Each structure stands twice: as structure tokens, then as C-alpha cells.
Picture (cartoon, rainbow, N blue to C red):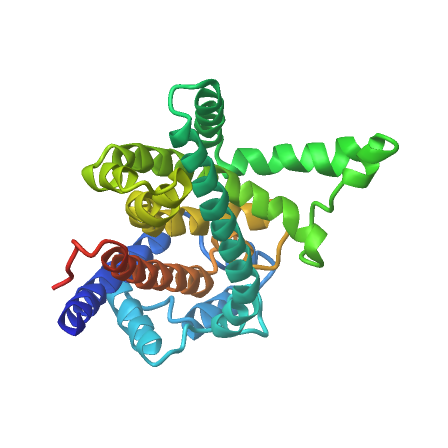
Length: 314
């Protein structure tokens, strides 16, 4: 196990280097620059600002300076939030983004697994077809389409309905109490719920036909015990495998969701940074998300070996 962890960490280092290098080159290649809107400034002032951020140097020199600062833990100053460093901005937005992503993913796994098990136990019945139809609909509608729809229904239309309709209306912006979090979490979780439900259903159907499940039934165990103690653990393996890409999906989805619901998370900083060509801020978000995805994928691989004893990590 220790050797496997060391190998994965050694592989992660060049992976991160490639991600940082490509992101650095792509954002520099994008049209426009961070000071293009500063038309009122004197040319000499713009030159001084470019020199302060090393933008007057060749790209390889810029990259070497940036990489050296990153290795020291310094992501640089923000170009649009003048009084803040990128480290400070990320630390202020991280609690919101992490809270949103964790709640959405937890909701997706719990509800998706339950729906998938129910569908598998009622295979080819009306309940199975109904649940899977909803799941396919959830997969087809991405979170950036779902978010504006939820905003219209729960934030605008229901407010115009008296009685219970007005009571069901929810805030559509800000990150305050629990009511402010409901719509962003639902928008982020619903597509993932659909995918987890499909994976759980497929895995459960396959496991219920396997020999060890038939043996458990022949021993006279109740169907509930067979499902919960024997079948479910093996049926969750496809879901565990999916959690790595699911984390990436939640992360990329949160960039749009935070912008739609005006949440003070890292996603909003990324959007604002990309619009205003704030190079250090965009790079900081990319590095943070890439690190999170690599680490969480490694954790998922560890869980895979725990859930299935047949899988041995060497």
C-alpha cells in the first residue's frame, strides 16, 4: 500500500506540472490582456504595471518566475482585487465551495444509491421504468441549465402565488442560512443523482444474479439482509469508481452555479478572473482544483480496495 501511494504521488507531480504549464500557456494565448481596459492610464503607467507583474518578459521567463513562486506557496497578487493576494482570495472562497460541493455530492450518493437499489429490486416493472426515465432526464439536463430554471420557479414564479406557493419560494442569491443553500445544492446534485442511480441499478442487477447472493438466499436469509449485507457492498463498486469523475463534475459545475446564485466561492473568483484576464487568480483556482481532483481520485482508489477484497493494491 505504501509503495502504491508513493508511485501515485510521483505520477501526480508531472501531471500537475503539465496542467500548470498548459493552463499558463492557454491563458496567455487568450485574446486581450489584464490592462486593456485601463485606457485612461498613461502608457508609462501601463508599462510599469506590466513590469510589476513580469508581463514585459518572455513567456518562458514568466513561467519560470511563476513556477518558482508556486513552489514556495505564493500564488501571487490578484490583478483585479488590488488589496488581496490570490492565497487570501482562495482561502476566503474555499469554505463556501467545499461546503457546497460536499453537500451536493453527499446528497447525490445517498439519494442516487437508494433510487438505484429500488429500481433494481423492481426490474422491468413500472417503478423501474419511471425511476430510470427520471434519471435519464436528470443526465440530459446539465446543472447550468437547471440552475436558471430553479431560479425562475422557486425565486420568481412562486413568490407571485399566495399561500403555500409563497411559502415555498426560496432565496436565489447569497450564501446565508440553510434556505440560501437549498437551490444551489439541488442544481449541483440532481445530475449526479441521476448518474449514481443508473450505476447503482446496473451494479445491483448484476450482483443479485451472482452465485454468492443465490447462496445467501439458499441459507434462508431474508431479502433485506441479502441486499444490505451481501449485495449492496459489491454493487457500489461502479459508484465508487465514478466518484473521481463525479468530483470533477461537481467542481466544474460549481463554477457556473456559484456565478448563477452569486455565491462568494472560488468559482465566482474564477469567472471574474477569466473575464478580467486576472492571470494569477485564474491559475490559482486551476491549481487548487487540479490538486483536489488528484488527491480525491487517489482516495477513491483506496476505497475501491477496501470495498472489494478481491482488489489488491500493489
